[in-house]
Length: 312
Image (cartoon, rainbow, N blue to C red; front, side, top):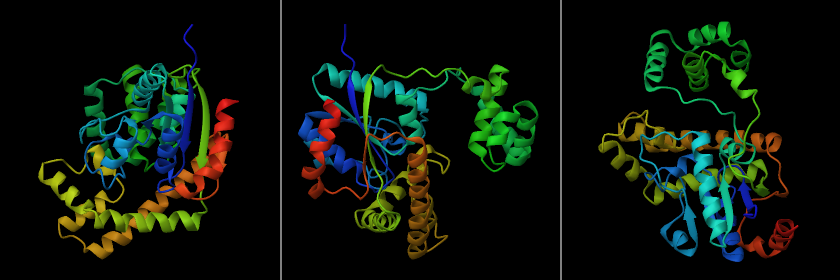
């Protein structure tokens, strides 16, 4: 019988030090780092998406970073399947799987599983996009309310992406999304998870977010956005959801000045970090919580506790 893999999960909001902790753990445990950050799955904008540097990539094995083109889409279920394969390969090779990222829904899909919702055909996706363009998100929300009131009640009329998803599933399967989601979830992999959550104080986290964006600019983040736009990638591409991409695009197009873009991007990043922290606080089970931003100086202090949890 194949042994059940024991997996370390490192989670937390952006700029909390997750990647640094995962790197230290991978070196101490002989591990492989597996990415659970949706935007770091894309190969473009490595600075703006805070992907591991070349030097960090050489220190230990990293998986699922930079595996998508700028316009490719990746669902939580598809990512969980890829992560399950990477975990299995790591465990089979005798290396400790370490999953790290801040995309809570990806982690939920891996650990708890998702309802097995059938794929939506491309023609229905296209029709839904056209419908949204024609009548707008609030009107489509009203149409959804008549056919899937349970899902519609959970969504704001301005939540375009989720309204479109619910409508697509309804059109493709003639079954409400809420019905699909009520079915028992099936985890992507039979594994045991030991989760570490980094939850710094808000003031500390926000300052780190602000400082990191300035550092990204100093290292050439704006140039990478410019190169991507010159290649013909549209504003609607998934990679353009990277924090700061919209603001830097506006600078490149001479719509705003760089100082304004920095202020706007820092605010967007802080708001995103706040939402992540709230989600993890209420919806994520942590076996160990670090209540400050991680730095390597803390590792010797916290590693014995994490290792004890992993072994027990």
